[in-house]
Length: 276
Image 1: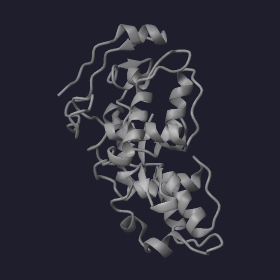
Image 2 (image 1 turned 180 degrees about the vertical axis):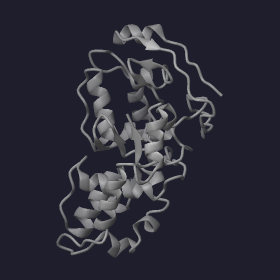
Image 3 (image 1 turned 120 degrees about the horizontal axis):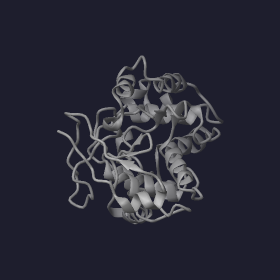
C-alpha cells in the first residue's frame, strides 16, 4: 500500500521551504495505535522513510556502525568501578542482553522507591546506578560510554514493542510533553507537529519527513557520523527552527521523550537504528 500526504501550504509558508509529495514503498509496515487518544491513524517507524540502502545497513549487524558501541558496552558490563568496586554484572548477572530483557522498551518511567524515586530515561538510570550503587562518576550525556550502555539496554529488547506508561504518576509529565509537542518555538514559530504529524511522508528539501518516532534510539545518523541520543535529536530539531534548546537529560526533554515514546507505543525496538 502507498500513502500520499497532501502538502500543507501553511507549514511551508512558515518555514519558507517547499514540501514535495512523496510515497512510502509498497508493503511498508505500520502498527495500529495502542490508544484511542492517539492523533495518528497508523504508527510508522522512521525505518520506512529511509532508502533501501540505509535500511540494509541497519538490518546487517556486521554493517550497522551502531553495533560497535554495543560491543564496547558489552565489554564494559563486567568492569568494576567506583568506591564500591562493583560492575553492572555484579548486580544484574553476567549476560547483559539476557539481564536487560524487558527493560529498554519501558523507558522513560518512574524508577526506584523512597528517596531515590525519580522519573528517568535509560541514560539517567544508568548514571544513577553508577553514582549511587557503584560510587563511580556519572558518564557525560551523548558520549560513547553512556551511549553504548544505553544502546545495550535498548538492544536487549530489539523486536519488542515500545510500551511506556503515561498514567498515574507519569500523567503530569505526559501532559507537559504533549503541550510541548504542539507548542510553537523559535524564530520559525514551528512545533514538532508541523513536521511529524502534519507533513510526515513529504519531502522538505532532501529530507523525507517521518513521524519522529523514537523506537530506534540511540540511533546512528549519517549526518552525525556517529550514534546519538533522543535528546540530541530533540536539540537538533530546536536548533533547526532557531529555538533555544532545552538541556539534555533534564525535565523538559524527559517530558517530550515520554510523549513521543507514547506516540510510538507498539512499534518494535530497532536500536541501534540507522538514519540519515
